[in-house]
Image 1 (cartoon, rainbow, N blue to C red):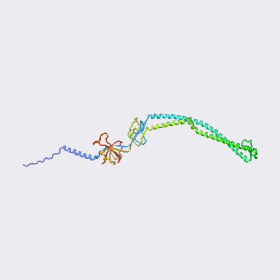
Image 2: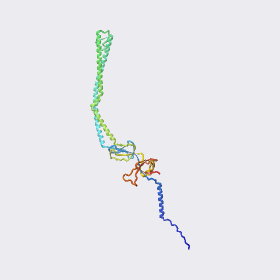
Image 3: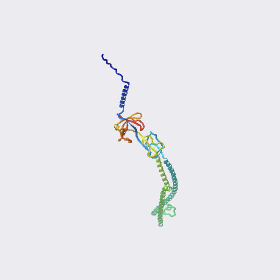
Image 4: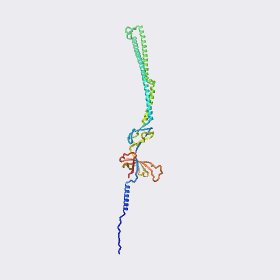
Length: 376
């Protein structure tokens, strides 16, 4: 009896095993895909920053109103906020009343001085007119005596004319005649001497009048100042000037209640609100310069070797917008955790700065979170 060999047919694999193999294959493929897509270096988070100018209060006061809104572009010396100081406002009002009172006092002194000057000048002008008239008369007499002296001198020298004593004037007393006798010559000589003396007296009188005129003219020029001093105008003016200077100083302090922008930029978030009391040194707002934006990232020290200066990185902005940047600064030291001991599982962070390159970065708010990854 021959042996009969029976061949058993192969049974199909159980369904559970097939499902298991399929899941393993799917997981392996997913792992490979993820490994190919993900960078070798882990992503780090950063935040958008810009060059900022800190605006602080330089005096005490209460926030009265805002001149600009948050996020608004401002220029140099643009008013930002207005402070109020009730004590300063009361002092300014009181000083303005003082200035007004002193101004009225000064006006009264000026009016009194002007009236007194007018009367004094009128009297001086009358005296000057009288002296000038007298001087003109003395000058006329001087010319007449000089003319008589000249004619008598010609008479005694030429012996061609004689003198008649009955004439009313010099010209009427001189007639053409014969030669002089001895008596007439002596008389003419005496007349000649008298004419010379009279001319000298008239000249002296003219000089006296001119001296008096000069003195009165000088006094006329000094009278306004002297009268103003005697009326107290100088004192009132000095008080007025001092009061106005104090008022100007107070108003200058009041102008400092308007805090203006010290730079060009965009107003950030105000640190104060309307009605808040601020002291000297209180932060008001930060001005953000959008033209000088950069990214600040904190890289674990174990990964810092991948972030050398000049390294190009890919940035993922909010809204999944991709841009590029370049590392341009690395902090000289790490920033360890100060509140706990360093262990194997903890790592200090190194701050790096990333500048813009390639396409312009999106216009997102300063401080927005940005993902940083090293480009392969």
